[in-house]
Amino acid sequence: MIIFTEIQQYQSSAFDTQFGSAQKMGKMTWYPWVGKQYVDAVCKVLVILESHYINRERNNIEALSLPNFTRRVVAEQVFPQYHWNSNTFNNLATCLSGQKLSPETAHLLWQKVALYNFVQRPMDNPDERPNAQDFANGWKSFPTVVDILKPNVCIFAGFAAISNISELPVELQITETTPLEKEEINGTYPRPCFTMQTAQHTLKGVAVKHPGSFFSIDKWRGILQRQAPNAIKMLSL
Picture 1 (cartoon, helix red, strand yellow):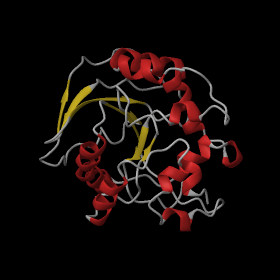
Picture 2 (spheres, helix red, strand yellow; picture 1 turned 45 degrees about the horizontal axis):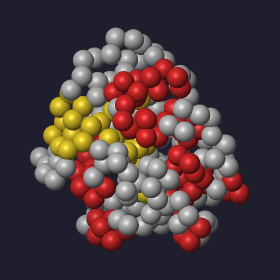
Picture 3 (tube, rainbow, N blue to C red; picture 1 turned 135 degrees about the vertical axis):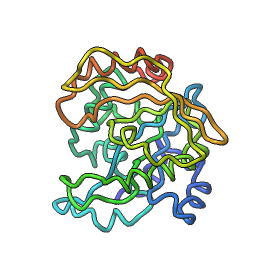
Picture 4 (spheres, rainbow, N blue to C red; picture 1 turned 60 degrees about the vertical axis):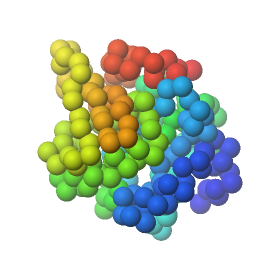
């Protein structure tokens, strides 16, 4: 288990009191990762992955019960001594930063962003997919996360959450703000960027295909550069 003092090199605990309150209210299972530079960033970027899962080969069941599990997953990309190879994180990091990052340089990106898992229950195995209720619960919790972190841009790594918006909570509104993209990439069409508004905060939302496999990094980076240029400029290395 990576100790918390080690994570503190690149991660901020500035919002932990609020995360703790949200957890007690049942709004959150795992605290988001918050990079040390996120707090004072001119453009605050929240990256959203879909779900965690039980990995019996890596024996992560006990770790999943702890509120810092998401932070542990990111830290395992940040610290070379704990690094494990992940197509999802490798492709996502290259897409966001514009460079292929090594375990020794990954911290240059991850200390800039916050990262949150949308579905706040673990999947039983890597093949299990979240169901409609998981996404409904995710949207109920999401305004709380937004109001705490106040991101300027949310980058969804995968389309599943934004494709399941039939049960949005009353305190969250989503409106499309750009025309549909016409170029097919990796067997799917890029989604429009959109405005998300809670009672306290307004932000831009953008999405790319899930970066785990069959992910054309340059093309999806091009989508992000068009839809969220300030965010991608800030994240570029």
